[in-house]
Length: 240
Image (cartoon, rainbow, N blue to C red; front, side, top):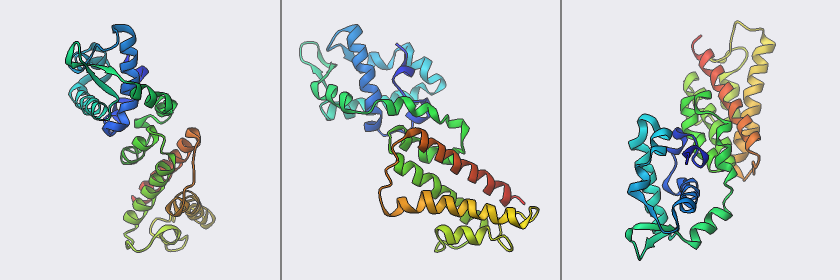
């Protein structure tokens, strides 16, 4: 059995909360029961499988801890239970556990590969990928553009009380903005200001006040990549 069939990419899995890791773990345990027999799930045996070594590489200890914490959460929530005939160290997936998997959108975990961790800014990745992997697309998009706003403020040394579009317009003012690229034509400097202001105004600000209901993971990924590109521009202009 390959853990890659069930688990998100390793770096994402390591950032998930125990309850968030429970869905891929439960799917894996159900598959394990199909091959080994119901009621024969054992945490010690599971943690020692070669599949975990292959999946985790030099981070085996970290993923085993994450799996252990998720396993304990599943026990506490009644998703798995001790096999009374074999002993408390042996478990089976309960009806409640099967219902959790059946009612969960497992495809969200599979689609996590849409955004490879090494393809975007590391800080951005740490903030949005755990949200993306569990399908919280609204918050992922909001956090992505919030990070853009934070970086702009920091790079331009602007006060905390300056927020949103006014912050962007100040930082990228075509004539005197700290982050405005004076090597470019004034029309291009204005266009850069418009690009950032439009992105913050359209993708960050509405989420601050209401549910936007981003539902398509592809569209969410596109917006995260847009935020990533804006961060590249900020970094480039802050070095000038």
